Image (cartoon, rainbow, N blue to C red; front, top):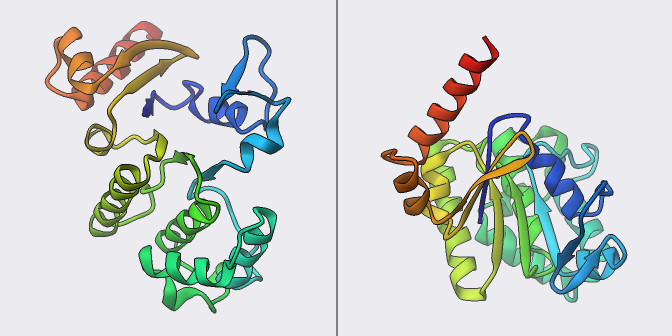
Length: 214
């Protein structure tokens, strides 16, 4: 599911509520049939999260960071898991490097390794390819789609790359000022609003917002 909207629409706040980091002031949240935040620990054991904007401890090596998270998630055979995921996401050569010395693109891939350590049923991704060059971003998208299809993984995905979202998503929710203004497959949304694609829809919304504010 692509979760879209302009800056300030409420995307990151919503993810924080879904992860139990912020308590909602109204409504209820149920994930995998369980109520958040009352069943937060049980829910978080079955989900994971990745964002290039979340910093890992810089003085630890990549391997040390991943071992810490493996213990937090009670990952069995964590050394093998780290090795296999390192190969999958192309970071094997970084495992013994201090995390603080990595580039933003390398950090993004390490965060994705972290996100798959516990074999999540739901994966929350906040702009996971924002720091990647086009080739690396394409490789990550391909990996995510393969994991989605092979494992039945649910991906909750935020991004400002509309083409990326169209490629990855079977359903899209568009948020504006904290309210849902569009919900459905990409082709349905662009057809209803008379646009060529999601990017044209996004740009039109942003321009209308500026005109109202002026």
